[in-house]
Amino acid sequence: MNLIKSTGTFSFFTVLSRISGYIRDILIAFFLGTGFIADAFFVAFRIPNTFRRLFSEGTFNAAFIPSYTSEQRSGKIKSDKFANQVFNILLIVLFLLVIIVELFAPFFVSLLAPGFIEDDQKIDLAVKLTRITFPFLLFVSLASFFAAILNSHNRFAAAAASPIILNLILIITLLISANIGDQLAYQLSYAVTISGIIQLLFLYIFVKKYFSLYLLIKINFNQKIKFFFKKLFPSIFAAGVTQINVLIGTIIASFQAGAVSYLYYADRIYQINLAIAGIAIGVVILPQLSKYIQSKNREKINLIQNKSIELCLFLSLPASIALLLGSEEIVSALFGYGSFNEQSIINSSKALFYFAFGLPAFALIKIFSSFFFANNDTKNPFYISLVSVALNVFISVYYFKEIGFIIIPIATSISSWFNTIILFLYLLNKDLFKFNKSFLIQFIKITFASLVMGIFFYFMITEFSYYLDDDYSLKAIFILIFVLLSILFYLLVSFLIKAFKLSDIRAKY
Image 1 (spheres, rainbow, N blue to C red):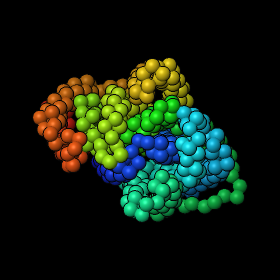
Image 2: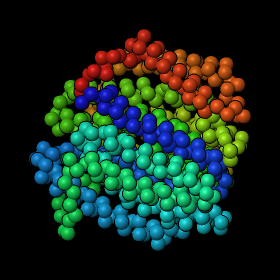
Image 3: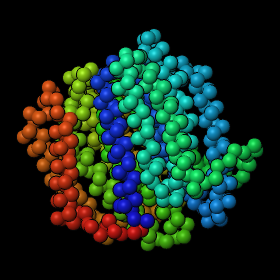
């Protein structure tokens, strides 16, 4: 496996997904803004979409791939048998969960958006929209199961491309519904669920080559199945801690008007880099790392671990600096149109600024967690994540009345750095990871290149600030040009000081 090539394949489709997601969100911002309808839709969308992220962004892989890889060594018949047992159990559990939420939607929404309770109109709308969107969870989670099988066979393109379907369907819905004057929030909610069905069918077309699906009348809960599900919940919680923190932030933010929307738009921007710097690398390294751990190839294990951290920092550090320096300009250029007013820009950019501090940590959690998961250890990162979430809740709740919604991204960043540091120290202590000789030098070079890029980016957005003014119609194009020029400048500097080497592109691990 070539780490950079495989990560590049996954990242390419992920970037396409995020770009289509940005177009989707700019249309939502234009037509819905940050009012009570937008808040209600984002809560209804956030609930199944958070579960989708928990399943699809490497967390289901964390428990499934090491077990499935082990079964593959015994042949396709045994690996298919194991996978079908898992699929059928997931189908039953998810179906029951959807039924429960549909029946008790008012309680469920009140639990996740308690700030809506005092507003009858808002909570009634949120409940109705949640009942429409929640079946999306069933379909997209099963689609994530298919994606995990494809990833196990080092096939990353289809799995990374499938979220594009959601974005395309929502974009079409936004354009059609806006023109015919239908109730937009309802149309979007139906589109969410329909996209889940299409994603499931799309991935099934690709997975048929590697996996023979069949429904079971009787499920055998043998030791291997029990061991897998024993790992599943801790792995979902541990690898999805950033999404859990964001969900908790949504719950707390529901007590402040518009805050759910401010956090949503900020989250959408930094998620673009997180998908590449953390999720893509974590997903790509897990199958190969699991194989080398089973064969006890220590040299390859150390090489993959060091290169994955190096690549993670290479991608996340410059993005973090750029978001810190240009958060307001970026939010204004991407979303500052129509119903998305000046107050929405200011508040969303504040949230983005503080999320930016935690961006490298968000990405590193994905990488460090994969080191644990490849060793079939989901409990320890689970316990560490549990403490991290508790810290996030404590800081958010304690300071919310005094500071308001802005404490949520601050608390998320602080707790994520805590999580990252504890994971790292535990890995070192248990001899599950050690730095190679070149890492420190590469880290210094990456940091230097990132800082120089930051100076270049700041010069661009200040020297040509006219093109980013609120009333300038092409500001989105210009911010994208500035970002692309900064990326090219960063790559050039990295190449000149050898923070990035062409040999890494050709290297196989």
